[in-house]
Image (cartoon, rainbow, N blue to C red; front, side, top):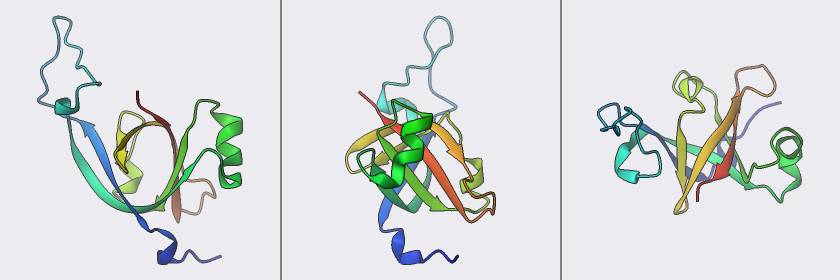
Length: 116
């Protein structure tokens, strides 16, 4: 089964917490403050909201999942973790899980929840 590049029509920005961000008295960085986040990568992806049947698996695994993002697998995508978030369409999506669904290292599935 081949993956068509045309299916990735959404541009997303993967963000990570700025390693130089100032923490509070306990050293904890405020993850709700946008100033504490920096761009990790910009990628082409397919983004589904939870209502689609394509995200049935996400609904079973993560009941609080609001979006599923799929992006081509490569060495950069492989480094995306649950400590990151995705900026897409004016929304901030917290990464809940990241997986290579088929195990063929072709496509990465990122399950997210909308940030408040």
